Length: 118
Image (cartoon, rainbow, N blue to C red; front, side):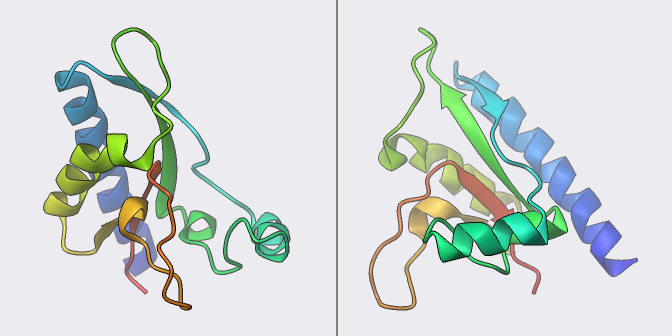
């Protein structure tokens, strides 16, 4: 029940984020919302993710955000205002633009929004 409640709360916050994106005269489409554990393992081997991704628990989503002229935002910095809003919704919400690797380097993952309840 705890995981289901976290997923439900996460989904509600995603809806709020999407509404905020649209209110700022941007729009979005879904990137990856669910990832199987097998796919997460493949991505980890390829250096494109981690094997214990929150996508496997339905607690992470990647959003493709576009400006009013239908240009896809590709720079993580362009997502920052959305990341700040996302993190303001719940203390367990994390934006990928602020990720730091275990080796101390900055990871650019601006289109990633998650709820870290682990």
